Amino acid sequence: MRTLPRWRQISEDLLQRLQHGEFTDGFPGELALADEYAASRGTVRQALGPLREKGIIGGGPGRQSYVIDTSRTLGLGPLYSLHDAITADGSTARSEVLTQEIVTSAEVSLALGLTPSTEYVHVVRIRYVDDVAIAADRIWIIATIAEPVVAADLSDTSVYDVLRSKCGVEIDAGVEYTRAETATGEIAERLGVAEGSPLLAIRRKSCVGGDPAELRDTCAVGDRVTMTHVFGDASAVLNCRGGGKPIEIPWD
Image (tube, rainbow, N blue to C red; front, side, top):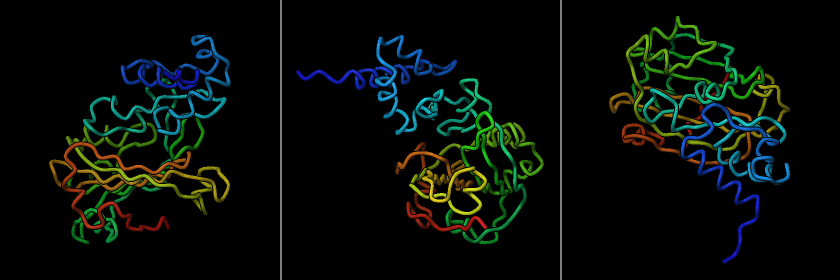
């Protein structure tokens, strides 16, 4: 039987440990892992590569990694909160709120399969980890269930926490589409990256009680990865017009 390379053995062992719930108090750095596995730092860095590419841990080569665990964030059912995923390991998450208002949008309604006159709570934020911009985030949630979000302080909390605590609403299913894009214009400037830098563009369509309720677009600084992630009973949003094909909604 062929023996796996040392870096692959470490990578697979770390994946199993993550799947079994280890590192809830923080993911160890490269030096600590090198000591634990009696391996060189280069071998450990190579082992962490596949975990970063799959979005299982965050961070980058030479920097402290943090776990992005989309299955263990508390109180959100099948959904994950970026805020909770960041803070789970002790990192500081904050948001610069650019827009927080009630709007109508024909494009959003088309994406969710709702009438053009539907009102939404619209929030646009720049997301930070330890004062480093990592993502631009814009959300539309139908106003009939989310109006209190307009007046909430979203600088250091999850929108889903506000929905749960102030609106009594739990988003319980949805679908995500992820594709590669490049940073341009205001997004590149806000994220502090060069024009043409690679981004992960993530679109989430979510439901409450089987009805479409939320559209979320996130542009995150990251590697070139494309994937579709379905969670819960997502039949309502999967059947919306457009399916998995993106409906363009300009940032401006």
